[in-house]
Amino acid sequence: MKNQMTRRQLAGAMLATAAAAQAPPSSTPAVPSTPAAELQAAHEQNQRTAEALAKVQVPMEAEPAFHFTA
Amino acid sequence: MAELGSDIFFAGIAELSRMVRAKEATAVELARAFGKRLESLGPRYNALALPLTERAIRQAKAVDAEIKRGRLRGPLQGIPYGAKDLLSVAGQITAWGARPYAAQVFDYDASVIQKLESAGAPLVGKLAMVELAGGPGYRYAAASLTGPGRNPWDTSRWSGGSSSGSAIAVAAGLVPFAIGSETSGSILTPAAFCGVTALRPTYGLVSRYGAMPLSWTLDKLGPFCRSAEDCGLVLETIAGGDRHDPGSAGKSFYYTPQYARKMSELRIGFAPADFSEWPEETARPAFQQALEAIRGLGATLVETKLPDFPYGALIGAIISVDAASVFEPLIASGQVEQLADQKQIAGLKAGLEISANVYLKAMRVRRLAQEAMRKLFSDVDVLLAPARLGPAPKIDEPLDHRPDRPRPKDAGLTALIPAGNLAGMPALALPCGFAGNLPVGLQLAGAPFTENTLLAVGKEFQSRTDWHKRKPPGAA
Image (tube, rainbow over all chains, first blue to last red):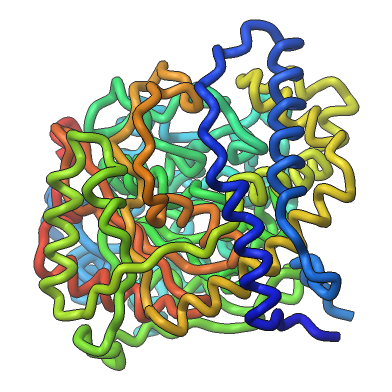
């Protein structure tokens, strides 16, 4: 099992996130006024999260940062 | 024995310990005095979840009997403390700050409660917290069973959260030290807003057995104190391996200021924009003076920046999914609607629908971020930044809708709280000045298991400044 990234892999992944980080900040939306609007806002936030993560390239051998001991 | 003076309420652990050993105060007297003060002033700040004064006095009687027999345990023997209400205490209500759990009782003590009991520290009260430690996010300071945490420096301002009661109780002299928790910012934020010293330990150093889970790979427990030195004493007591905690690192911690590296050997990374551009206008002078004070310690300050990752998205995805899984029965039962904060209710529900693909992507990118942070610490020993960029907000202000300000071009270390938590790094919050009448604080973050280095820098900083000794006007 190999968990260490090579410098090249790490640099590639970090460059990929630079584009995501440089996106202009969206203006602050209004405070949701109903539970339904709040839920919709939460779903939209999750969508933005998924989109931000999708922009990051991950080397195939990168394992999730779980801790498991047999 | 002479009656205890009011000076004891702001005394450090070493001084209180000296008084106990010199028989200038008994453990019972300290437990009674702090318990009474916590019960009378705690509600003023919405800091108290459950008074335990009588229980503490019973503990203290046993401690006094031990001391009388000449059995001395350590610096916390006879020193009262408070614990965030996410820690179980056998037979007592543990409400997690949330209405659906208002009657919850466990039949066992959390590991940190056990360790502190073994050290002879009487527990005088459970301290208030943001409901479910903030879960996947909340909008208002009022997101708590006990109401909004009120800042002892100005009760119209928020204490910060989610360890609100822990920070308030130390700031107002209601307890000598307190235990809080952090998943992402819940120790550093209230410490900064209330002007107290607090330590977020390395992930896995302190057992979380008996603590409410929020995010299994992020949750940490740590001390709120009057000084860096006190944080070292408390951490030494509560750290250590625990087979009951799957995340336990199996390591102990020994506070060894005598072996601290010389300041002149340390490289401290910082970003100028964090001190000159990012802070709110009123807080800039304090942060800039604090930066100069750190420079004056003799360490080498080097400009640095965080590796470029979407830290907010990473930690948001992980906490949302973990919290939704932990509280899935609460959501399914409909009792989630009893929570005080609509944003938190919605966040928990929506967290159930985040795909496994997104979660695993977040955890894989986290691995890259952790590796990049490790490389950063080959160049610097400590990272330095404001703990929060300004003083405490008003208590009724939406926390996620603060006024837009132009964003500086240089991101600096503004993402250090999520980055540090994602990488399991320790961090120390230090009071460093005021913006108006409200305190502001620094954070020092280090590589995993470098608590002694952070505490050494904090101790040196506090030997040259007196921000940590200031008392809120209403509580003095």
